[in-house]
Amino acid sequence: DSNLEELHLWGNNLSGNIPESISNVSKLRNIALMANSFSGHIPNSLGNLTFLEELRLWKNNLTIETNSNGEWSFFASLLNCKYLKVLDLSVNPLKGVLPTSISNLSETLQVFSCGDCRIEGTIPTEIGRLNNAMILELTNNELIGSIPTTIGGLTNLQYLGLSGNKLKGSIPHDLCGLKGLFELSLDDNELDGPLPPCLGELTSMRKLHLSFNKLHSSIPFSLWSLKDILEVDLSSNYFNGSLPLEIGKLSVLQHLNLSMNSLSNDIPSTIGNLRDLQVLALSSNRFQGLIPTSFGDLVSLESLDLSDNNLSGVIPRSLEGLRHLNNFNVSLNRLEGEIPSGGPFANFTSQSFMKNYALCGPPRLQVSPCKRNTHRNSKKTLLHVLRYVLPIVVSIIIVVTLIVVCTPLKKKRKSTSSTTIEDSFPLKEWKRISYDQLSKATDGFSGGNILGSGSFGTVYKGILFDETEVAIKVFNLQIEGAFRSFDVECEVMSKIIHRNLVKVITCCSTTDFKALVLELMPNGNLEKWLYSNNHFLDILQRINIMIDVASALEYLHSGYSTPLIHCDLKPSNVLLDKDMIAHVGDFGIAKLLGEGDSMKQTMTLATIGYMAP
Figure 1: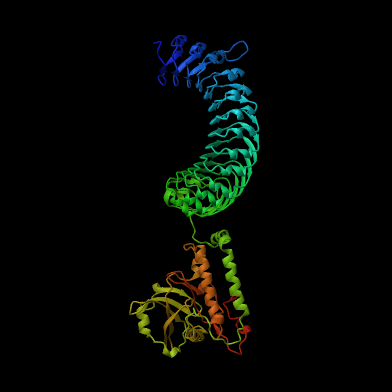
Figure 2: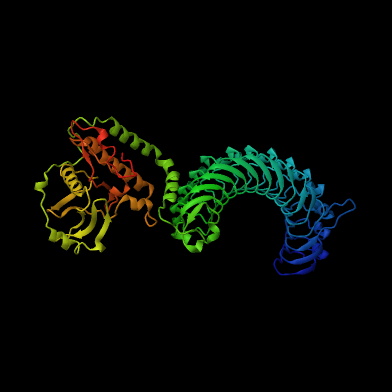
């Protein structure tokens, strides 16, 4: 049909040669024969189609005939096609060299695509004459030499694809003239040198792919001003330096791959601002410090690769909320602590956590089982986290030290604290409780109710007649010093009351039986929490316990009218209530200091092997 204007036969598995007679359909404007199995030379007679606007022959087995000079004769035939806008010959074994006659193609040409065509040689500088070109694709060929600077003159260019070749040299600064560029793909070449800072001026850029080259130096700061960019892939280069906080301004970024470089220092927490980020790859660098907890705000994240760095600390539990996360890798780091188990972590395998410092978790992850708060692990965890609370800790220590050292212990003073509850009442005013009542409360002082043992007796858990749960400290009067210890505790506890001191409810005292009924501390003593494998204190709990004990000591030393020295302060004498509030107890060898007493009198009273404060 001589009036036929469009011929669409794509995707039909057609084979054989493209017939020369196709040129007889003189009014053809659009030829689409892609995704077939056509072979042989592309007919030069196609150049006779003077109205031709689009020629799409990609994904066939076509070749191009060359003239005596080795140039593609087919290109010369296209000189007659003055309206040609699209020439797509990709994925064909064209071979050969791009001819300089490429400059003679139609001035209206907008798309020139010859990717995967086995083209050799250099890119002719004449390619810079395709003034109206919007798409220039020469990916996955065997091109050598440098990128022609003349490409920088193609001011209408939106896509430049030169990836998968053997191009060398630096990235021309001339490319910064492509103000309308949407995508720059130069990955998988042999390009070297620094990245031109002026690329940060290409505000239309949405995709920047420069991976697998030999680019070096630091990443230009200007690059992080491309606030509308969607994809940045600079992986497998030699970039160094650190990432600035300004990276968090790439608010619509979806794909960031900086893996296999030499980037160092901390990972910026501002990356957590990138709510649209789907892929974050920072593996095989020299990043150190903690994994930012702000990563838990990356609500769109699907893949996170932080492997092969020097990251330390724990895996933030905030990552458990990333419901789209399906690929996660933190192997080859110095991470420790328990691997989170919630959210996407239920689906990750051991490959995600291999070769770390001291991660622990379930057997399926092939890591050590978690030993809650062993001395070694708790100490290391504390060291990592103290970087954030060290100023608070130092302040507390300084204040307590000044109080203890500077307070004149010889001088009786009146309490001036408005926050301390102080009550003073003699032993005779305590409401006594009988031996029979205590025996009934403890099921006959059953061994199953023993909470612990000390130097002068045993502590039982008991339930009084009014259902009150208490701790009953029964003194072993056969031990020398037990009588005195009971008397001292009665004397001391009858004079002082403070929220961080163990409260005495009542007592039982006969000739051959003496016991104190104390407020029950459900969470036991601090020693259990510090050195047991089955208990764990986080950093906030540790700090709060330090504050509680310091508050109790401040009251004992200077908050009461008669200074009192505990003489046996240690973790086993610090008890924790149901809210994990610390209470100092066991005043069996405490010392009340009067006018004639000296600090030296208390220095040898502490438990053997332990020097009390």
